[in-house]
Image 1 (cartoon, rainbow over the protein chains, first blue to last red):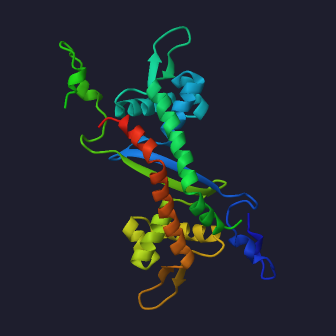
Image 2 (image 1 turned 135 degrees about the vertical axis):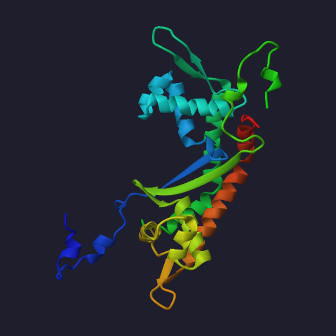
Image 3 (image 1 turned 120 degrees about the horizontal axis):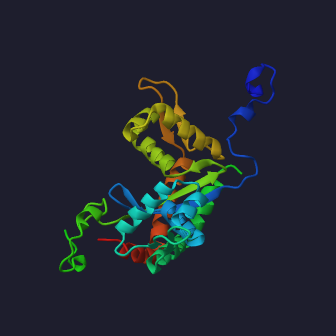
Amino acid sequence: MTDPAKRSPKSSRPAQSARPRARAGESPDVRFRMRICRGDVVALGPGKVALLEAVREQGSITAAARHLGMSYRRAWLLIDELNRSLKSPATVSEQGGQSGGGCVLTPVGEAIVRLYREIDQEAHRAAAKQIAELTRLMRA
Amino acid sequence: MTDPAKRSPKSSRPAQSARPRARAGESPDVRFRMRICRGDVVALGPGKVALLEAVREQGSITAAARHLGMSYRRAWLLIDELNRSLKSPATVSEQGGQSGGGCVLTPVGEAIVRLYREIDQEAHRAAAKQIAELTRLMRA
C-alpha cells in the first residue's frame, strides 16, 4: 500500500502521486440535473424522473425499485411525494390481481418524463459553447 | 386551504393530511446543476463553484470554509481536487504573512465561475418553455 513515489529519495517519479484520481484517457462527462424545489423539498429531480421511467418500463413500483436498487418503501415514498406535489398524479396503481399491484404512468407522468428529457437536451445544446470552454480547461 | 373542487357535498375525506409538505404560496424554484465528472469523481459541480466564489469573496480558504459552514479540511480537499483536474490551477495560495495564507482566484478560476454561471443562465433561457409547462403541472 505504500506509494512508491513517496518511498525513496532516489525515486525519479514523484509526479505520479499528484495525479488526479481520474483514469487516463477518460473524457469528462457533462451531466445536467434540473431540480424543481419548493422550500427544502425536491418536488421533481433526476431521481424521481428515473423512477417514473423505471415504473413505465417495469410495470410496477416493486419491479422499478428492484431495477434501481432501492427499497420498495423508498420508491413508494418518492412517488407519493411527487404525486402530492402535482395537480394531478403521475402514476395510477392497480390494486390486487394475480401479480400484485401494477403501476402505470398517467398522461401527466408521461409528460413529465418527456419535458424533463427535453429540458436536458435544450440545456446542453444552448450551453454547448461554454461547456466546451470549460472542458478545455480540464486535463485530458 | 381545502380545495373546493375536491370537496364533494358529503365528502368526509381528510384532504388536509394529504397535502404536500410545501408551504402554501411558495412558488417552485427551478435549479440547474451541472457537473463535469470523470469516472466517479465530480471534477466540477455546484459545490466547487460555490467554494471558488466564496474564496474570491473572502480572500482565504479558511474564511471561505467558515462562510459555507464546512471544515477547512474539506474546503482544502475540494480545491485541491479541482486544481488537480485542471490543466492550470483555479487558485493561488499565498503562504504566511501576518494574516496567514490568503488565497485568490487565477484567471482560470475566474473563467470557471463565469462559464458556470453562464451555462446556468443559458440552460434556463433555452428550456424556459418546457420549464413553464412542467411547473404548470405542479400544485400552486
